Image (cartoon, rainbow, N blue to C red; front, side):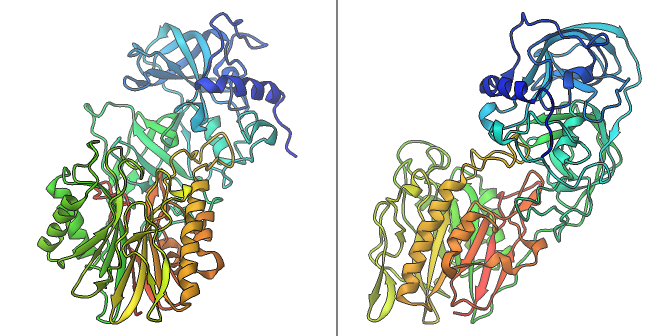
Length: 613
Protein backbone atom coordinates (compact mmCIF):
# COMPACT_ATOMS: atom_id res chain seq x y z
CA UNK A 1 0.00 0.00 0.00
CA UNK A 2 1.30 3.47 -0.89
CA UNK A 3 2.63 5.35 2.14
CA UNK A 4 1.11 8.74 2.87
CA UNK A 5 2.79 12.02 3.64
CA UNK A 6 4.04 12.31 7.27
CA UNK A 7 1.53 15.10 7.93
CA UNK A 8 -1.40 13.06 6.59
CA UNK A 9 -3.01 12.27 9.95
CA UNK A 10 -2.76 15.83 11.22
CA UNK A 11 -3.96 17.25 7.94
CA UNK A 12 -6.93 14.86 7.80
CA UNK A 13 -7.98 15.83 11.34
CA UNK A 14 -7.68 19.53 10.53
CA UNK A 15 -9.61 19.21 7.28
CA UNK A 16 -12.40 17.19 8.90
CA UNK A 17 -13.21 20.01 11.32
CA UNK A 18 -12.36 23.10 9.31
CA UNK A 19 -13.81 22.22 5.90
CA UNK A 20 -17.31 22.67 7.32
CA UNK A 21 -17.02 26.44 6.76
CA UNK A 22 -15.62 26.15 3.22
CA UNK A 23 -12.54 28.12 4.32
CA UNK A 24 -9.59 26.70 6.20
CA UNK A 25 -7.75 29.59 7.75
CA UNK A 26 -7.05 29.19 11.47
CA UNK A 27 -6.95 32.18 13.80
CA UNK A 28 -5.24 35.43 12.92
CA UNK A 29 -3.07 35.02 15.97
CA UNK A 30 -1.52 31.74 14.86
CA UNK A 31 2.24 31.41 15.04
CA UNK A 32 4.26 32.79 12.16
CA UNK A 33 5.24 30.16 9.63
CA UNK A 34 8.84 29.69 8.58
CA UNK A 35 10.90 27.19 6.68
CA UNK A 36 13.65 25.30 8.42
CA UNK A 37 16.40 26.97 6.36
CA UNK A 38 15.12 30.54 6.08
CA UNK A 39 12.14 32.64 4.99
CA UNK A 40 8.96 30.94 3.89
CA UNK A 41 8.86 30.24 0.15
CA UNK A 42 5.78 29.52 -1.93
CA UNK A 43 6.64 25.82 -2.21
CA UNK A 44 6.78 25.67 1.58
CA UNK A 45 3.21 26.99 1.67
CA UNK A 46 1.99 24.58 -1.01
CA UNK A 47 3.63 21.50 0.46
CA UNK A 48 3.35 18.01 -0.99
CA UNK A 49 -0.33 17.37 -0.31
CA UNK A 50 -3.47 19.28 -1.32
CA UNK A 51 -3.60 21.04 2.06
CA UNK A 52 -0.90 23.51 3.00
CA UNK A 53 1.30 22.42 5.92
CA UNK A 54 1.10 26.08 7.02
CA UNK A 55 -2.69 26.37 6.90
CA UNK A 56 -3.92 28.78 9.55
CA UNK A 57 -0.52 30.37 10.04
CA UNK A 58 0.69 33.89 9.35
CA UNK A 59 3.54 34.13 6.85
CA UNK A 60 5.82 37.10 6.31
CA UNK A 61 7.50 38.52 3.21
CA UNK A 62 6.76 35.64 0.85
CA UNK A 63 8.49 36.59 -2.40
CA UNK A 64 7.20 36.12 -5.92
CA UNK A 65 6.57 37.60 -9.36
CA UNK A 66 2.99 38.54 -10.22
CA UNK A 67 1.76 36.27 -13.04
CA UNK A 68 -1.89 37.26 -13.22
CA UNK A 69 -4.32 39.81 -11.79
CA UNK A 70 -8.08 39.20 -11.40
CA UNK A 71 -10.17 42.35 -10.95
CA UNK A 72 -13.61 40.69 -10.81
CA UNK A 73 -15.23 37.79 -8.98
CA UNK A 74 -12.72 36.38 -6.52
CA UNK A 75 -10.39 39.38 -6.70
CA UNK A 76 -6.70 38.93 -6.20
CA UNK A 77 -3.49 38.00 -7.96
CA UNK A 78 -1.11 35.10 -8.42
CA UNK A 79 2.56 35.13 -7.56
CA UNK A 80 5.23 32.62 -8.49
CA UNK A 81 8.69 31.96 -7.16
CA UNK A 82 11.12 31.94 -10.12
CA UNK A 83 13.59 29.90 -8.05
CA UNK A 84 11.90 26.50 -7.96
CA UNK A 85 12.84 23.68 -5.65
CA UNK A 86 13.62 20.21 -6.99
CA UNK A 87 10.36 18.58 -5.80
CA UNK A 88 7.83 18.05 -8.59
CA UNK A 89 4.99 17.77 -6.07
CA UNK A 90 5.32 21.30 -4.70
CA UNK A 91 3.76 24.15 -6.66
CA UNK A 92 5.72 27.37 -7.02
CA UNK A 93 2.63 29.54 -7.40
CA UNK A 94 -0.08 30.74 -5.04
CA UNK A 95 -3.18 32.94 -5.14
CA UNK A 96 -3.29 36.09 -3.03
CA UNK A 97 -6.90 36.97 -2.15
CA UNK A 98 -7.35 40.72 -1.83
CA UNK A 99 -11.20 41.02 -1.89
CA UNK A 100 -10.76 44.51 -3.39
CA UNK A 101 -9.29 45.26 -6.82
CA UNK A 102 -5.55 44.53 -6.65
CA UNK A 103 -3.08 47.37 -7.20
CA UNK A 104 -0.24 45.19 -8.53
CA UNK A 105 0.59 44.43 -12.17
CA UNK A 106 1.92 41.41 -14.01
CA UNK A 107 5.70 41.40 -13.77
CA UNK A 108 5.84 43.10 -10.36
CA UNK A 109 8.17 41.53 -7.82
CA UNK A 110 6.45 41.63 -4.44
CA UNK A 111 6.66 40.45 -0.88
CA UNK A 112 3.40 39.26 0.64
CA UNK A 113 2.56 38.81 4.30
CA UNK A 114 -0.76 37.32 5.32
CA UNK A 115 -2.79 34.33 6.47
CA UNK A 116 -2.44 30.95 4.75
CA UNK A 117 -5.79 29.28 4.14
CA UNK A 118 -7.56 26.65 2.07
CA UNK A 119 -10.62 28.03 0.32
CA UNK A 120 -13.20 25.52 -0.92
CA UNK A 121 -15.04 26.88 -3.98
CA UNK A 122 -18.72 26.04 -3.59
CA UNK A 123 -18.35 25.22 0.09
CA UNK A 124 -17.47 22.00 1.88
CA UNK A 125 -20.71 20.25 0.94
CA UNK A 126 -19.70 20.46 -2.74
CA UNK A 127 -16.86 18.00 -2.20
CA UNK A 128 -14.58 20.29 -4.18
CA UNK A 129 -10.89 20.45 -3.58
CA UNK A 130 -9.56 23.55 -1.91
CA UNK A 131 -7.41 26.36 -3.24
CA UNK A 132 -4.35 27.27 -1.22
CA UNK A 133 -4.25 31.04 -0.79
CA UNK A 134 -2.86 33.93 1.21
CA UNK A 135 -5.60 36.21 2.52
CA UNK A 136 -5.64 39.54 4.41
CA UNK A 137 -2.42 40.38 2.62
CA UNK A 138 0.07 43.17 3.21
CA UNK A 139 1.86 43.64 -0.10
CA UNK A 140 5.24 45.28 -0.46
CA UNK A 141 6.40 46.24 -3.96
CA UNK A 142 10.01 45.37 -4.73
CA UNK A 143 10.36 46.12 -8.45
CA UNK A 144 8.33 46.30 -11.65
CA UNK A 145 8.73 45.01 -15.20
CA UNK A 146 10.24 41.65 -14.32
CA UNK A 147 9.99 38.67 -16.64
CA UNK A 148 7.16 36.33 -15.76
CA UNK A 149 8.45 32.89 -14.75
CA UNK A 150 8.48 30.56 -17.74
CA UNK A 151 5.17 28.77 -18.19
CA UNK A 152 5.00 25.04 -17.56
CA UNK A 153 3.68 23.26 -20.65
CA UNK A 154 0.62 21.07 -20.14
CA UNK A 155 0.34 18.59 -22.98
CA UNK A 156 -0.38 15.00 -23.89
CA UNK A 157 3.07 13.94 -22.73
CA UNK A 158 3.00 15.65 -19.34
CA UNK A 159 -0.51 14.66 -18.17
CA UNK A 160 -0.61 11.11 -16.77
CA UNK A 161 -3.07 8.58 -18.17
CA UNK A 162 -4.44 7.61 -14.73
CA UNK A 163 -6.92 10.12 -13.33
CA UNK A 164 -6.76 10.04 -9.54
CA UNK A 165 -5.56 7.96 -6.60
CA UNK A 166 -8.11 6.07 -4.54
CA UNK A 167 -9.26 8.04 -1.54
CA UNK A 168 -8.02 7.21 1.93
CA UNK A 169 -10.62 4.97 3.65
CA UNK A 170 -9.55 6.39 6.99
CA UNK A 171 -10.47 9.89 5.77
CA UNK A 172 -13.90 9.11 4.29
CA UNK A 173 -12.39 8.57 0.87
CA UNK A 174 -10.61 11.92 0.74
CA UNK A 175 -7.35 12.35 -1.16
CA UNK A 176 -6.50 15.60 0.65
CA UNK A 177 -3.98 13.99 2.97
CA UNK A 178 -2.24 11.82 0.38
CA UNK A 179 1.19 12.77 -0.90
CA UNK A 180 0.93 14.05 -4.46
CA UNK A 181 2.22 11.80 -7.23
CA UNK A 182 2.17 14.14 -10.23
CA UNK A 183 3.87 11.72 -12.57
CA UNK A 184 1.25 9.05 -11.86
CA UNK A 185 -2.14 10.79 -11.53
CA UNK A 186 -3.65 13.58 -13.60
CA UNK A 187 -5.37 15.24 -10.63
CA UNK A 188 -2.11 15.18 -8.70
CA UNK A 189 -0.31 16.64 -11.70
CA UNK A 190 -2.72 19.55 -11.98
CA UNK A 191 -2.63 20.10 -8.22
CA UNK A 192 1.17 20.25 -8.30
CA UNK A 193 0.79 23.20 -10.69
CA UNK A 194 -1.95 25.00 -8.74
CA UNK A 195 -1.39 28.75 -8.95
CA UNK A 196 1.54 28.44 -11.36
CA UNK A 197 1.97 30.01 -14.77
CA UNK A 198 1.10 27.29 -17.30
CA UNK A 199 0.49 27.07 -21.02
CA UNK A 200 -1.09 24.84 -23.62
CA UNK A 201 -0.48 24.67 -27.35
CA UNK A 202 -3.01 23.98 -30.10
CA UNK A 203 -5.79 21.90 -28.55
CA UNK A 204 -9.15 20.58 -29.68
CA UNK A 205 -12.28 22.12 -28.20
CA UNK A 206 -14.35 19.45 -26.43
CA UNK A 207 -16.85 21.73 -24.68
CA UNK A 208 -18.42 24.69 -26.48
CA UNK A 209 -18.27 28.25 -25.14
CA UNK A 210 -20.90 28.57 -22.43
CA UNK A 211 -22.90 31.60 -21.20
CA UNK A 212 -20.28 32.17 -18.50
CA UNK A 213 -17.40 32.73 -20.94
CA UNK A 214 -15.64 29.42 -20.54
CA UNK A 215 -14.83 26.57 -22.88
CA UNK A 216 -13.16 23.19 -22.54
CA UNK A 217 -10.23 21.77 -24.44
CA UNK A 218 -8.39 18.49 -24.38
CA UNK A 219 -4.63 18.51 -24.62
CA UNK A 220 -4.84 14.86 -25.66
CA UNK A 221 -5.97 14.71 -29.26
CA UNK A 222 -6.38 10.93 -29.19
CA UNK A 223 -8.19 10.47 -25.86
CA UNK A 224 -11.58 8.78 -26.34
CA UNK A 225 -12.55 10.86 -29.40
CA UNK A 226 -16.15 11.10 -30.51
CA UNK A 227 -16.99 10.93 -34.17
CA UNK A 228 -17.50 14.71 -34.21
CA UNK A 229 -14.42 15.89 -32.32
CA UNK A 230 -15.43 15.69 -28.67
CA UNK A 231 -14.21 13.46 -25.86
CA UNK A 232 -16.41 10.55 -24.81
CA UNK A 233 -17.23 9.75 -21.20
CA UNK A 234 -17.79 6.05 -21.63
CA UNK A 235 -17.39 4.68 -18.11
CA UNK A 236 -16.74 5.77 -14.54
CA UNK A 237 -13.07 5.03 -15.20
CA UNK A 238 -12.97 7.18 -18.34
CA UNK A 239 -12.71 10.65 -16.80
CA UNK A 240 -10.60 11.98 -19.72
CA UNK A 241 -7.43 13.30 -18.16
CA UNK A 242 -6.63 15.80 -20.92
CA UNK A 243 -9.67 18.02 -20.29
CA UNK A 244 -9.02 21.53 -19.07
CA UNK A 245 -11.35 24.47 -18.61
CA UNK A 246 -10.31 27.74 -20.25
CA UNK A 247 -11.34 31.19 -19.05
CA UNK A 248 -9.65 34.56 -19.42
CA UNK A 249 -8.31 37.15 -17.00
CA UNK A 250 -9.42 40.15 -19.04
CA UNK A 251 -12.95 41.34 -18.20
CA UNK A 252 -15.43 40.52 -20.98
CA UNK A 253 -16.22 44.22 -21.31
CA UNK A 254 -12.63 44.79 -22.35
CA UNK A 255 -12.02 41.61 -24.36
CA UNK A 256 -14.89 39.47 -25.68
CA UNK A 257 -14.43 35.77 -25.09
CA UNK A 258 -14.24 33.69 -28.29
CA UNK A 259 -17.18 31.60 -29.44
CA UNK A 260 -16.19 27.98 -30.05
CA UNK A 261 -17.97 24.72 -30.81
CA UNK A 262 -16.85 21.16 -30.22
CA UNK A 263 -14.44 20.17 -32.95
CA UNK A 264 -12.93 23.64 -33.26
CA UNK A 265 -9.27 24.20 -32.39
CA UNK A 266 -7.82 26.63 -29.90
CA UNK A 267 -4.63 27.48 -31.76
CA UNK A 268 -1.46 29.26 -30.75
CA UNK A 269 -0.42 29.52 -27.11
CA UNK A 270 -2.83 29.98 -24.24
CA UNK A 271 -0.99 30.98 -21.07
CA UNK A 272 -1.85 32.06 -17.54
CA UNK A 273 -2.26 30.89 -13.94
CA UNK A 274 -3.81 27.49 -13.17
CA UNK A 275 -6.81 28.05 -10.92
CA UNK A 276 -9.46 25.77 -9.42
CA UNK A 277 -13.14 26.73 -9.37
CA UNK A 278 -16.42 25.11 -8.39
CA UNK A 279 -17.68 24.89 -11.98
CA UNK A 280 -15.23 22.40 -13.39
CA UNK A 281 -12.15 22.27 -11.24
CA UNK A 282 -8.75 23.05 -12.74
CA UNK A 283 -8.98 26.06 -15.00
CA UNK A 284 -6.37 27.85 -17.05
CA UNK A 285 -7.22 31.51 -16.52
CA UNK A 286 -5.65 32.93 -19.64
CA UNK A 287 -3.49 36.02 -19.55
CA UNK A 288 -2.80 35.28 -23.19
CA UNK A 289 -5.58 33.50 -25.06
CA UNK A 290 -5.10 31.53 -28.26
CA UNK A 291 -7.23 31.91 -31.37
CA UNK A 292 -10.24 29.74 -32.17
CA UNK A 293 -10.01 28.08 -35.56
CA UNK A 294 -13.51 27.07 -36.56
CA UNK A 295 -14.20 23.51 -37.62
CA UNK A 296 -16.92 22.25 -39.93
CA UNK A 297 -19.37 20.89 -37.37
CA UNK A 298 -23.02 21.26 -38.40
CA UNK A 299 -26.28 20.15 -36.74
CA UNK A 300 -27.29 16.65 -37.79
CA UNK A 301 -30.47 15.64 -39.61
CA UNK A 302 -31.94 12.21 -39.07
CA UNK A 303 -33.35 10.05 -41.81
CA UNK A 304 -37.11 10.25 -42.37
CA UNK A 305 -39.09 7.15 -41.42
CA UNK A 306 -40.46 4.90 -44.15
CA UNK A 307 -44.24 4.47 -44.49
CA UNK A 308 -44.17 1.19 -42.57
CA UNK A 309 -41.83 2.51 -39.82
CA UNK A 310 -42.94 4.16 -36.62
CA UNK A 311 -40.60 6.98 -35.59
CA UNK A 312 -40.53 7.76 -31.88
CA UNK A 313 -38.38 10.53 -30.41
CA UNK A 314 -37.57 12.23 -27.12
CA UNK A 315 -36.50 15.83 -26.65
CA UNK A 316 -35.80 17.89 -23.52
CA UNK A 317 -36.85 21.41 -24.58
CA UNK A 318 -35.36 23.13 -21.51
CA UNK A 319 -38.13 24.82 -19.56
CA UNK A 320 -40.29 25.87 -22.50
CA UNK A 321 -43.14 28.21 -21.61
CA UNK A 322 -45.15 30.98 -23.34
CA UNK A 323 -42.94 33.74 -21.92
CA UNK A 324 -40.03 32.41 -23.99
CA UNK A 325 -39.31 34.28 -27.19
CA UNK A 326 -41.03 33.33 -30.39
CA UNK A 327 -37.53 32.72 -31.73
CA UNK A 328 -37.04 29.87 -29.25
CA UNK A 329 -40.36 28.29 -30.21
CA UNK A 330 -39.54 28.65 -33.90
CA UNK A 331 -36.04 27.21 -33.50
CA UNK A 332 -37.30 24.19 -31.55
CA UNK A 333 -40.09 23.68 -34.09
CA UNK A 334 -37.67 23.86 -36.99
CA UNK A 335 -35.54 21.20 -35.28
CA UNK A 336 -38.55 18.90 -34.93
CA UNK A 337 -39.37 19.24 -38.64
CA UNK A 338 -35.94 19.47 -40.26
CA UNK A 339 -33.58 17.68 -37.90
CA UNK A 340 -35.93 15.05 -36.47
CA UNK A 341 -37.92 14.55 -39.70
CA UNK A 342 -41.27 15.06 -37.92
CA UNK A 343 -41.41 11.88 -35.82
CA UNK A 344 -44.75 10.14 -35.40
CA UNK A 345 -44.55 10.31 -31.60
CA UNK A 346 -42.45 12.87 -29.75
CA UNK A 347 -42.03 12.75 -25.99
CA UNK A 348 -41.16 16.17 -24.64
CA UNK A 349 -39.51 16.89 -21.30
CA UNK A 350 -39.47 20.23 -19.45
CA UNK A 351 -42.72 21.65 -20.79
CA UNK A 352 -43.61 24.33 -18.26
CA UNK A 353 -47.04 25.62 -17.30
CA UNK A 354 -48.77 28.53 -18.99
CA UNK A 355 -46.87 31.28 -17.19
CA UNK A 356 -43.52 29.61 -16.66
CA UNK A 357 -41.69 30.27 -13.42
CA UNK A 358 -44.40 32.59 -12.04
CA UNK A 359 -45.34 30.83 -8.82
CA UNK A 360 -49.10 31.40 -8.64
CA UNK A 361 -50.64 27.93 -8.67
CA UNK A 362 -51.01 27.63 -12.44
CA UNK A 363 -50.48 24.05 -13.64
CA UNK A 364 -52.05 23.94 -17.11
CA UNK A 365 -49.68 23.90 -20.09
CA UNK A 366 -52.29 24.33 -22.82
CA UNK A 367 -50.91 27.70 -23.90
CA UNK A 368 -47.35 26.34 -24.02
CA UNK A 369 -48.39 23.37 -26.13
CA UNK A 370 -50.70 25.37 -28.40
CA UNK A 371 -47.89 27.80 -29.15
CA UNK A 372 -45.36 25.01 -29.79
CA UNK A 373 -47.70 22.95 -31.98
CA UNK A 374 -48.51 26.05 -34.04
CA UNK A 375 -44.81 26.76 -34.51
CA UNK A 376 -44.25 23.20 -35.76
CA UNK A 377 -47.08 23.53 -38.27
CA UNK A 378 -45.71 26.90 -39.41
CA UNK A 379 -42.32 25.24 -39.96
CA UNK A 380 -43.91 22.75 -42.33
CA UNK A 381 -44.52 19.96 -39.85
CA UNK A 382 -47.66 17.97 -39.09
CA UNK A 383 -50.57 19.23 -37.01
CA UNK A 384 -49.51 17.44 -33.87
CA UNK A 385 -52.00 16.63 -31.13
CA UNK A 386 -50.87 16.19 -27.55
CA UNK A 387 -51.62 14.29 -24.40
CA UNK A 388 -50.30 15.03 -20.93
CA UNK A 389 -51.31 15.11 -17.27
CA UNK A 390 -51.02 18.33 -15.31
CA UNK A 391 -48.89 17.87 -12.19
CA UNK A 392 -49.83 18.96 -8.72
CA UNK A 393 -48.52 22.45 -8.06
CA UNK A 394 -44.90 22.47 -6.88
CA UNK A 395 -44.76 18.65 -6.55
CA UNK A 396 -42.59 17.67 -9.54
CA UNK A 397 -39.37 19.61 -8.99
CA UNK A 398 -37.72 21.72 -11.64
CA UNK A 399 -37.73 25.51 -11.72
CA UNK A 400 -39.91 26.83 -8.86
CA UNK A 401 -43.35 27.71 -10.20
CA UNK A 402 -42.65 26.13 -13.59
CA UNK A 403 -44.38 22.79 -12.98
CA UNK A 404 -42.49 20.93 -15.71
CA UNK A 405 -44.00 17.75 -17.10
CA UNK A 406 -43.66 15.22 -19.91
CA UNK A 407 -45.93 15.50 -22.94
CA UNK A 408 -46.73 13.25 -25.89
CA UNK A 409 -46.99 14.94 -29.27
CA UNK A 410 -48.28 12.65 -32.01
CA UNK A 411 -49.14 12.97 -35.67
CA UNK A 412 -52.80 11.83 -36.02
CA UNK A 413 -52.29 11.28 -39.74
CA UNK A 414 -49.87 8.47 -38.93
CA UNK A 415 -50.69 7.20 -35.43
CA UNK A 416 -53.67 7.23 -33.11
CA UNK A 417 -53.78 7.69 -29.36
CA UNK A 418 -55.91 5.24 -27.41
CA UNK A 419 -57.80 7.21 -24.80
CA UNK A 420 -58.67 5.13 -21.74
CA UNK A 421 -60.13 6.94 -18.73
CA UNK A 422 -57.41 9.61 -18.68
CA UNK A 423 -55.68 9.69 -15.34
CA UNK A 424 -54.78 12.61 -13.12
CA UNK A 425 -51.71 13.64 -11.14
CA UNK A 426 -52.33 11.24 -8.24
CA UNK A 427 -53.95 8.24 -9.94
CA UNK A 428 -51.80 5.31 -11.00
CA UNK A 429 -52.33 3.60 -14.32
CA UNK A 430 -52.27 -0.18 -14.43
CA UNK A 431 -52.21 -3.10 -16.86
CA UNK A 432 -55.30 -5.17 -17.74
CA UNK A 433 -56.57 -7.53 -20.40
CA UNK A 434 -59.40 -6.09 -22.48
CA UNK A 435 -61.05 -8.37 -25.03
CA UNK A 436 -57.95 -10.53 -24.93
CA UNK A 437 -55.61 -7.60 -25.55
CA UNK A 438 -53.22 -5.96 -23.09
CA UNK A 439 -54.21 -2.39 -22.23
CA UNK A 440 -53.61 0.41 -19.76
CA UNK A 441 -56.28 1.24 -17.22
CA UNK A 442 -55.58 4.96 -17.76
CA UNK A 443 -54.16 6.35 -20.99
CA UNK A 444 -52.59 8.80 -20.56
CA UNK A 445 -51.72 7.79 -17.02
CA UNK A 446 -48.99 8.11 -14.47
CA UNK A 447 -46.93 5.21 -13.17
CA UNK A 448 -47.19 4.73 -9.40
CA UNK A 449 -47.27 8.49 -8.59
CA UNK A 450 -47.54 7.88 -4.83
CA UNK A 451 -44.23 6.00 -4.80
CA UNK A 452 -41.69 7.97 -2.68
CA UNK A 453 -39.24 7.56 -5.57
CA UNK A 454 -41.15 10.33 -7.38
CA UNK A 455 -41.22 12.84 -4.51
CA UNK A 456 -40.32 16.27 -5.90
CA UNK A 457 -39.68 14.64 -9.26
CA UNK A 458 -41.49 14.12 -12.53
CA UNK A 459 -43.79 11.12 -12.61
CA UNK A 460 -43.59 8.87 -15.71
CA UNK A 461 -46.31 9.41 -18.32
CA UNK A 462 -47.62 6.23 -19.98
CA UNK A 463 -49.65 6.21 -23.16
CA UNK A 464 -51.16 3.63 -25.48
CA UNK A 465 -50.83 4.22 -29.22
CA UNK A 466 -51.90 2.34 -32.35
CA UNK A 467 -49.84 2.26 -35.54
CA UNK A 468 -51.07 0.21 -38.50
CA UNK A 469 -53.27 -1.82 -36.20
CA UNK A 470 -50.48 -2.60 -33.73
CA UNK A 471 -50.46 -1.39 -30.14
CA UNK A 472 -47.39 0.44 -28.90
CA UNK A 473 -46.94 1.42 -25.24
CA UNK A 474 -44.79 4.51 -24.70
CA UNK A 475 -43.54 5.65 -21.30
CA UNK A 476 -42.07 9.16 -21.13
CA UNK A 477 -39.69 9.90 -18.27
CA UNK A 478 -37.69 12.68 -16.69
CA UNK A 479 -35.73 11.11 -13.86
CA UNK A 480 -34.22 13.04 -10.95
CA UNK A 481 -31.31 15.31 -11.77
CA UNK A 482 -27.66 14.88 -10.84
CA UNK A 483 -27.88 17.86 -8.51
CA UNK A 484 -25.86 17.24 -5.36
CA UNK A 485 -23.38 14.88 -6.98
CA UNK A 486 -19.72 15.72 -6.54
CA UNK A 487 -17.64 16.60 -9.59
CA UNK A 488 -14.94 14.43 -11.07
CA UNK A 489 -12.32 16.68 -9.45
CA UNK A 490 -13.74 16.11 -5.96
CA UNK A 491 -11.36 15.49 -3.08
CA UNK A 492 -13.34 12.27 -2.57
CA UNK A 493 -12.18 9.63 -5.01
CA UNK A 494 -14.30 8.14 -6.36
CA UNK A 495 -16.65 11.13 -6.09
CA UNK A 496 -19.89 10.79 -4.15
CA UNK A 497 -22.85 10.42 -6.55
CA UNK A 498 -25.65 10.82 -4.03
CA UNK A 499 -28.36 11.51 -6.62
CA UNK A 500 -28.09 7.97 -8.01
CA UNK A 501 -30.07 6.50 -5.12
CA UNK A 502 -33.27 8.23 -6.20
CA UNK A 503 -32.87 7.40 -9.89
CA UNK A 504 -32.25 3.77 -8.99
CA UNK A 505 -35.62 3.63 -7.23
CA UNK A 506 -37.27 5.40 -10.16
CA UNK A 507 -35.76 2.94 -12.62
CA UNK A 508 -36.94 0.00 -10.54
CA UNK A 509 -40.48 1.39 -10.53
CA UNK A 510 -40.53 1.79 -14.31
CA UNK A 511 -38.95 -1.61 -14.84
CA UNK A 512 -41.60 -3.18 -12.62
CA UNK A 513 -44.36 -1.58 -14.67
CA UNK A 514 -42.84 -2.76 -17.94
CA UNK A 515 -42.64 -6.27 -16.51
CA UNK A 516 -46.37 -6.08 -15.77
CA UNK A 517 -47.03 -5.31 -19.43
CA UNK A 518 -44.73 -8.12 -20.56
CA UNK A 519 -46.33 -10.56 -18.12
CA UNK A 520 -49.64 -9.85 -19.83
CA UNK A 521 -48.11 -9.96 -23.32
CA UNK A 522 -44.52 -11.04 -23.78
CA UNK A 523 -44.62 -9.69 -27.34
CA UNK A 524 -45.79 -6.21 -26.36
CA UNK A 525 -44.13 -3.27 -28.07
CA UNK A 526 -42.92 -1.05 -25.22
CA UNK A 527 -40.70 2.02 -25.46
CA UNK A 528 -39.30 3.71 -22.37
CA UNK A 529 -37.74 7.03 -23.23
CA UNK A 530 -36.85 10.48 -22.01
CA UNK A 531 -34.29 12.37 -20.00
CA UNK A 532 -33.05 9.54 -17.80
CA UNK A 533 -30.36 11.81 -16.36
CA UNK A 534 -27.95 8.91 -16.25
CA UNK A 535 -25.40 7.08 -18.34
CA UNK A 536 -25.92 3.98 -20.44
CA UNK A 537 -23.42 2.16 -18.19
CA UNK A 538 -25.01 3.34 -14.91
CA UNK A 539 -26.83 1.35 -12.25
CA UNK A 540 -29.93 3.34 -13.24
CA UNK A 541 -29.86 1.99 -16.77
CA UNK A 542 -29.08 -1.51 -15.51
CA UNK A 543 -32.16 -1.32 -13.26
CA UNK A 544 -34.33 -0.18 -16.17
CA UNK A 545 -33.13 -3.12 -18.24
CA UNK A 546 -33.30 -5.65 -15.39
CA UNK A 547 -34.42 -9.12 -16.34
CA UNK A 548 -34.16 -8.37 -20.04
CA UNK A 549 -37.31 -6.25 -19.89
CA UNK A 550 -35.66 -3.42 -21.81
CA UNK A 551 -32.62 -2.78 -23.97
CA UNK A 552 -30.82 0.61 -23.99
CA UNK A 553 -31.00 1.27 -27.72
CA UNK A 554 -28.18 3.81 -27.68
CA UNK A 555 -25.86 0.84 -27.13
CA UNK A 556 -26.60 -0.17 -30.71
CA UNK A 557 -24.53 2.81 -31.86
CA UNK A 558 -20.75 2.80 -32.20
CA UNK A 559 -19.22 4.02 -28.95
CA UNK A 560 -18.00 7.24 -30.55
CA UNK A 561 -21.62 8.25 -31.21
CA UNK A 562 -23.11 7.45 -27.78
CA UNK A 563 -23.82 10.83 -26.24
CA UNK A 564 -26.62 13.36 -25.91
CA UNK A 565 -25.10 15.96 -23.62
CA UNK A 566 -21.73 17.62 -23.07
CA UNK A 567 -20.74 18.48 -19.51
CA UNK A 568 -17.35 19.91 -18.56
CA UNK A 569 -15.91 18.69 -21.84
CA UNK A 570 -17.23 15.15 -21.48
CA UNK A 571 -19.66 13.93 -24.14
CA UNK A 572 -22.08 11.64 -22.30
CA UNK A 573 -25.47 9.96 -22.34
CA UNK A 574 -28.41 11.41 -20.40
CA UNK A 575 -31.27 10.96 -22.87
CA UNK A 576 -32.29 7.44 -23.82
CA UNK A 577 -34.81 5.22 -25.57
CA UNK A 578 -35.12 1.64 -24.33
CA UNK A 579 -36.95 -1.14 -26.17
CA UNK A 580 -38.85 -4.25 -25.11
CA UNK A 581 -37.72 -7.67 -26.48
CA UNK A 582 -40.34 -7.67 -29.25
CA UNK A 583 -38.65 -4.68 -30.89
CA UNK A 584 -35.80 -6.65 -32.39
CA UNK A 585 -34.97 -4.56 -35.43
CA UNK A 586 -34.70 -0.80 -35.27
CA UNK A 587 -32.53 2.12 -36.27
CA UNK A 588 -31.40 4.56 -33.62
CA UNK A 589 -30.05 8.08 -33.91
CA UNK A 590 -28.72 10.49 -31.32
CA UNK A 591 -29.30 13.64 -33.32
CA UNK A 592 -26.55 16.09 -32.41
CA UNK A 593 -28.01 19.56 -32.78
CA UNK A 594 -27.39 21.29 -29.44
CA UNK A 595 -24.91 19.82 -26.99
CA UNK A 596 -21.80 20.51 -29.06
CA UNK A 597 -22.68 24.08 -29.98
CA UNK A 598 -22.33 27.44 -28.25
CA UNK A 599 -25.67 28.49 -29.75
CA UNK A 600 -28.26 26.10 -28.35
CA UNK A 601 -32.03 25.77 -28.42
CA UNK A 602 -31.69 23.26 -25.56
CA UNK A 603 -28.72 21.73 -23.77
CA UNK A 604 -29.81 18.21 -24.77
CA UNK A 605 -29.67 16.37 -28.08
CA UNK A 606 -32.90 14.61 -29.09
CA UNK A 607 -33.05 10.85 -29.68
CA UNK A 608 -34.98 9.07 -32.45
CA UNK A 609 -35.83 5.38 -32.91
CA UNK A 610 -37.50 3.91 -36.00
CA UNK A 611 -38.97 0.39 -36.14
CA UNK A 612 -41.68 -1.69 -37.74
CA UNK A 613 -44.16 -2.90 -35.08
